[in-house]
Amino acid sequence: MTHLPSVEIESSASVPVSASVIWLHGLGADGHDFAPLVPELRLPDSLSVRFIFPHAPQIPVTVNAGYFMPAWYDILEMNLERKIDEAQLNASAIAVQDLIRRELDRGIASERIILAGFSQGGAVVYQAGYTFDKPLGGFLVLSSYFATGSSININEANKNTPILIQHGTRDPIVAPILGERAFKFVQTFNESVSYETYPMEHTLCGEQVVAISQWLQKQLEN
Figure 1 (cartoon, rainbow, N blue to C red):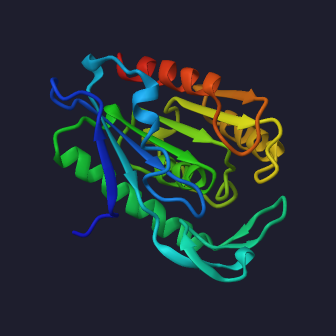
Figure 2: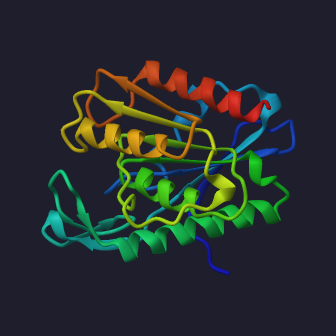
Figure 3: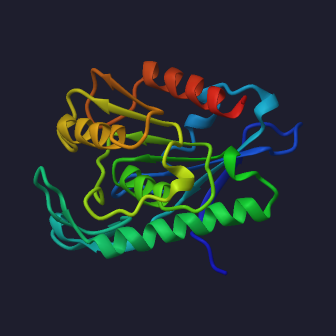
């Protein structure tokens, strides 16, 4: 099977890998975008996490004048409702699920696999995570929105998977209301959801990175 090309980083060279984080970038970026974050998370060596940062395929993006760029799916209209190519998003979600299954084949328990995604990547995390058929360790959704909320069939295996949603209060790309809507929707079926905001735009900040590290440790130390 051909998997999405990825950047892989292991947080400890001295302890065998026991957990995996699959982290999806946003529109126009690639797998290298969040790789420098690994040392900043300062995870203890005992967790021994393998970080996987896949590259999205190059596709034409309608709202960017049809230019080819790394994207998990096409965005047809850049309005609050975010009209997208849902078939492409589903295909990306399936590709991410293939990465999850590869980690299972490598000996990682499903409950120790976490999905993370920024912007477009977060929309794919919602779809890939909530339709996967084995319980996962958690979902981390950054500056994103639930693009498939009206069509998704949530698998019972991940209905209550812990999820942390974070958003910038000054985000001009993905309006904060979209993060709030996603949070409220997830609350309707998942009691293990947290929502945090930070005074920033469409990016990450230092305080947020500390919170992400604490959340990852909480999920993986169980």
